[in-house]
Image: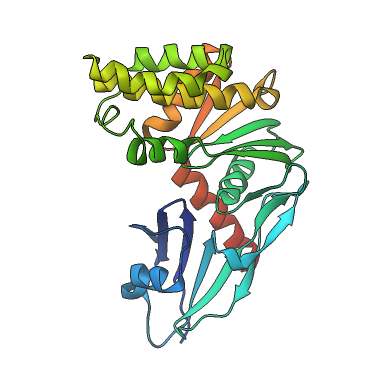
Length: 282
């Protein structure tokens, strides 16, 4: 039987996002997954939207089996067929992007770039894709020229869970003034950050607020990233793609450097990129 339903999916960090397209309605779904997404995890999330008498196309970004296209190259606009163990789906994997020097890889976030370029085809400048792994991406003439990945978000999580700082930064709130000062300090003297980290623990032991420590840790890490990524953003048009407080903090940190940045929703750009892949395949 003919099946007009199709499913878009993207594995971003520890999140698996899905959008079920059926009868003109898009239904978003979300699951937390481990380091590598499996077909079983995908099927668990979408099984109630599959029909036993039809094959549903599933276009997924972030599958390791898809492979990578070396830059410079346009952001991904097609997908490759992947063997599936479930006859109810036709699994298609969106390829990522790779870079030889310095060696780098971009998986599912490449579809965010595709979504942005589709929305702003004449845009020239740099994207910062925020998340557990942040990426600075140079875009020119609709192509990805180069990119650089930073583990800033992952380092924040690891330090907060598995280091002496864990107790110090356990706060639902974050002091934004402390964050701004830490960004400034880290950008001016990034070599001092490693030595300053333990002082967060000591300061809380001495009575400082955990919200202050959390803001300072976030500011140190983002400030160090901005210092390293300065060749990307200095003198460039900059746009940020991400979600929640994290992307807002990147925006505030850049604004303090006199760099205004557009902010775009990460889920929206991801879906737009996957929809462009679907349009090329139909």
